[in-house]
Length: 383
Image 1 (cartoon, helix red, strand yellow):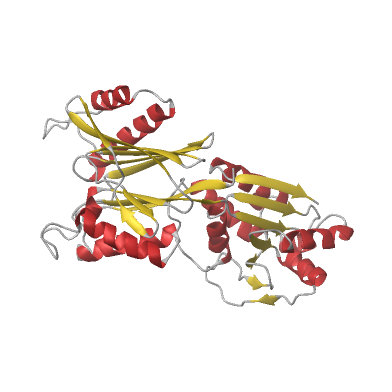
Image 2 (cartoon, rainbow, N blue to C red):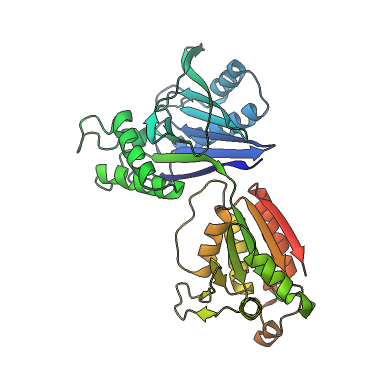
């Protein structure tokens, strides 16, 4: 399929809390994406436990395609009872999208989803179901190209309660801001970041409730081609350089020697920055037609560390160093082609790099495996 569901989320704990009482669970497999948002009763650790338990149970049961009644009853029967309130409570929003754009939405005690289409935010048509005294809303829809859906916890729509706004932003107020941000920028990360900043402003910087916003978009797949390492056979220098420059989508070079080869074979001037934005990551370079030029092993190892710690859908921190920029490109890409040279780089031997850096082929393999864990399509070409 040429289309993909792209999702990002971010949450902010309520004031005086270190742990967010909301939890997001994402499962992508067999062309389907399941996204679950749960808001646990109260705040802090206890709320987080409730929300985490709810979302993990939900994603597992929906993945088995069990009847909705059975899923909801299982969740109700499984949640631990709060000692103070005597109830087991957690909100639930579940969105299931296939790669053809067919989507199913389940909502229980949560703000209604925000659907962005044709430059407008609107509510999604739904039917009401009663299960064990709980009102459940179920929706089915067909997403079009570049359509977006936002799922929010109570902390978003309640922003400003008792302060700037008597009753908070509400659904309509939140929809208005999301619509304006969506018209301004197509980046889900931009929209989420700015919407959360708006919420924080309404709370005077001290959120009275946990804030979580998930944004997802149905879009065409993005391609990224990365060239790293000199080929074993010098005759392949021109081959790999041409493969890179003629590739569709974003392009990256990792490695100083590799960049020099591309510069020579393509007849383009290589320029290097001297500014360090991270003391552990060498400066980037610039080559016309290439989106980013970074150092080799040091940068790739940093990216590998980032990937190992990354959870599907999380907003990755912004930065200007080569590793952070390359990580952002990887997360925003769906098809990743790695063109890898096997030649031993003499400069690495002279640097006496630590053993834990490993050889380039091992690092590339580990990066590829972590990208596959995130459901990226990865291809490696060895030279």
